[in-house]
Image (cartoon, rainbow, N blue to C red; front, side, top):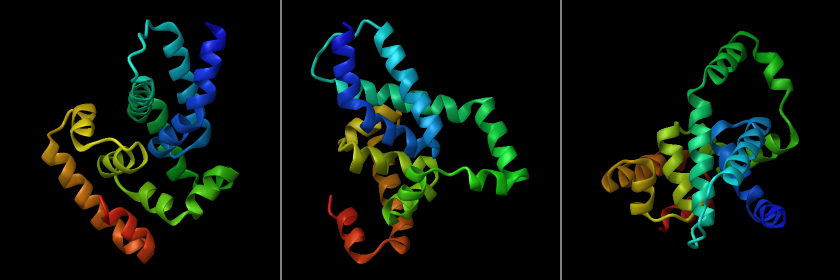
Amino acid sequence: MDGILEKIIDEHADHLLRLAYFYVKNLQTAEDIVQEVFIKFSQCDYEERGQLRAFLSTLTINQSKDYLKSWHYKKLLLQEKVFPMKWNKQRDELVAAEERSYVGAAILKLALMYREPIILYYFEEMKIHEIAQLLGIAENTVKTRLRRAREALKPHLKQEEWEVLRHE
């Protein structure tokens, strides 16, 4: 079992880390979330049905959302507002590199309700009906949020980056 779990971690850790990071915008927190996901995965009775990536992604999304609802996160937000300079100095290289990316920076500025469908659609390559099912919303709501997210992103992106988002 340990060899199988190590292989799963090797194959999916980077993907899950990026996914968690897009939710929580903090590398250390994203790493903690991914670690917690793998702990939960190792303790559950998962039956392989060819959906492992989707299963791990769902666990990561749910864990990220739970973190965003937590008192710890809300306390950090308050501390960041009270002591902004302290938090700005603690950025690491991955965060800085991601924020230098125009698309990544623009996506991170979106509200979560618009960031989720964009991430799931473009980065997870999920279909509209899969996103709707995962988020528990109507397909038309997913389409509307994608459209609004694209509209919000348009002023922040270069022409070639905009073309990528425009083609579905």
